[in-house]
Length: 130
Image: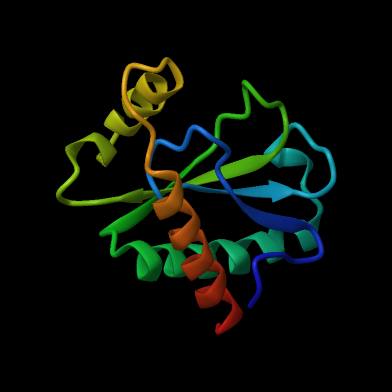
């Protein structure tokens, strides 16, 4: 499985990145609501989501991957895939939203860019071998 399908694309979160390994799955066509997905888009998303979460866990060593969707700032169907680490309290539960806001406001340093690039390369490699 690669990091893209007919209808979806996996990409790194743009700078500033709160946590290395934070990725986004985007619908390639524009839609603002999950209820407007076509059947084939829904089917493809399930497979890509499963594979992407497994690749993120393998690349980051995280305990789990949170899947978030609000689509308020960017009114487009997309998912945030967020690595949750047991030893990083800021990445647990709703604290991850506070972390996101703190990084966006410049109150906390973003994840190291080189580390983000290395982890994204490992995620893509893991997906290519699925």
